[in-house]
Image (cartoon, rainbow over all chains, first blue to last red; front, side):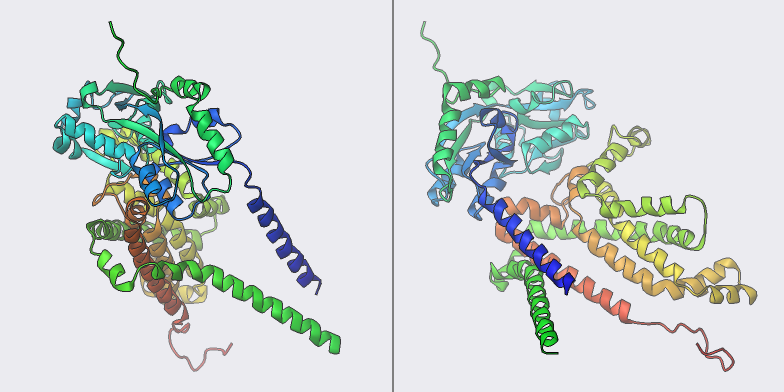
Length: 250
Length: 278
């Protein structure tokens, strides 16, 4: 019988612990695009972050994930969530550009974007649907490279940091990532610029999740990201100001 | 007496309650996969090219991995089961280690071994073999995580073979090769089949090591679990359909495992009038 009592105490304790864990959700939970992995914790060190492909995060929010804020690497996903009342009206909080990265040793000897057409180059991109994957397809279309480059694609990853990892490891010969991602692994990859005329419009959108029980903190976080200080932190990681600066009049 | 019955009753209720919780917890998520989408639509979604391509990749790579597991795993298991040598325990632990390793660790290990800049990477490259992002990489990932299940079960199966029968075969003039194929293998076959069924089920479900080591490309390296992961964020219903398919396949595998285990071959090779009754 002692064993039974012990088991009962154990079960009660387990429920108490898990209950306590569930109640402490006063900390802010931010679901953010993988490309924000380094910058966002600097803006709100106390918050909990879930970094992944924006599309995976959007799906999780639609399935009731306990997010307070959603920060996406495009405007399409948060606008879609807003349309279906899953989040507030999104605002642009930063912008980015795409680059091609190659391992430092550059095994396929890639000098420019057009070299990616060479047969046998192992190219890693993100899956279409992941924001950076969609942007990659836009760049290829703009440069008229779609068919030859897609023929060289060896893997479609689920977020931008997985593309980065595969190239930093040297497994792939070239990959498409944001310029901010390339900066996080200095010395491991070389960056090849994509011409400005071929760049897609990369705008990051942020919104408060409708089901959040922490709306005040969520709004405060968004305000912080948009503030001068927040924008300065974003820029220090290579992100662009949220509004394109107007060309100076002469 | 009265008190005793009361306690027994209370204990019974507690056990019954715990049992109900356990069953519901384990069964509900599996059942729920089939409840979100109507069965007819679920079947139609299986015609999606993402699903058919993933099914073909899963089938091919799993099959290739099973061949590797059986061809290399069976002799390895037999040697471990039949010999006593220094370091045997260490060897067994090493063989079983991938069983308990997180798949992500398996993926890392495979990358730093077979990857382009891994331990064997430059050697393979010199031979003109590049493993990363190919179906070979998927097969290696599957074999790495699934073979310990087979080898472990096979060792137990070989150890359960009655040494008297092996000795009898040898004294009757059969060579060690003949004894292995005519006596040991048939007697251990049951256990080997059970181990293989487990390894097969684990192979079909392999995810972590594959996505890290082989990447994910539809029709090339994207197995069913990888396709589920990608479809989850793009087309949830297709992901559910593939989930349902894997549940069905796994259920069939587990059921056949039960059948294999319940089938008892005769322990005696021939009825003998003079054999001592045990």
